[in-house]
Image 1 (cartoon, rainbow, N blue to C red):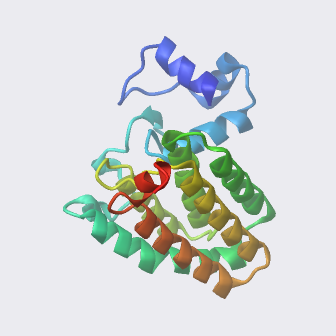
Image 2: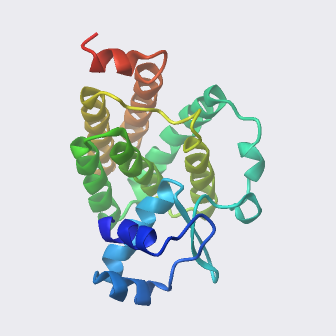
Length: 220
């Protein structure tokens, strides 16, 4: 990730610019293609790059004309609308993913939870949090559900929607909830995965609203 970000800065790339093909970029960065894909997937989940089949990888958020359907969801949706939609959708997604996730999916989810727990600031937290939730969508193996999860993740990067985590205690609390979700998925317990995801989203709504997270940071 660090090498990729340095590459972007060194080459003065900006939103809308296309990155070199994976093979060449991996050679330039002196990393494996698997390592590069993991970094690109994290950036894509946080809305900082987008990839189109046959088009390549571009910096910036995916333009609406290339959105994977349901593009109208972005227009006019308030933070409360998005939170309500997530509460209805993501628990069901986690329940389905619990029955369909592969071993590699679960390993990647565990890695994301560890990275969340180790995050030292909100930017690091957002990177791995977005990837965590997108991976759950991908674990369903359902293209329609994955497309919807991509749209939701894209909506979450808007400044007025992001669930900011100023307090380290809050980040660790959410990371523990992520670990609980993964544990339920590893047990193939669809009901428990759904319930723990719902509890997590409710906690996020409560802790990141009306300054509660900032109060925790100040010892309040």
